[in-house]
Length: 123
Image (cartoon, rainbow, N blue to C red; front, side):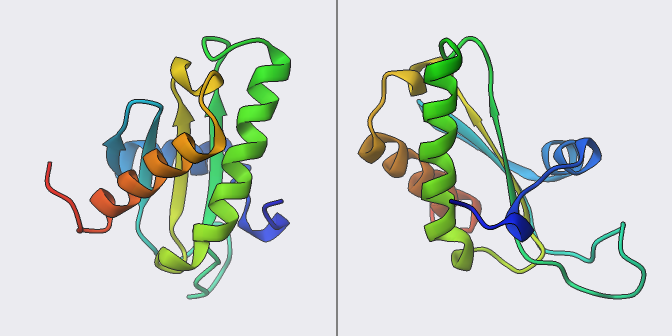
């Protein structure tokens, strides 16, 4: 499970990551990453931990499938938080094929997206 302090919860934080961050698309998901910065909701110059949020629409499947995809993505993100700069905002949006994908396929797409966003891959 993803620790509470690493969860993206506010609507404006999701919007900030999507609008101001970089994007990498893969067949099963799209990852938006806004690199580390100070938290606008906390006074002072405190760098918050990396936070991640997930968007899984009804196009992915029914409630059971959507929740399973979210659980898999949270588990995968927990293992990858240390790769990202402190204070980063990450939004992972699952595409319709993610409902039929297994854990390994989601992990491959997530790793490829992070590699591209962090400067390791070509466009």
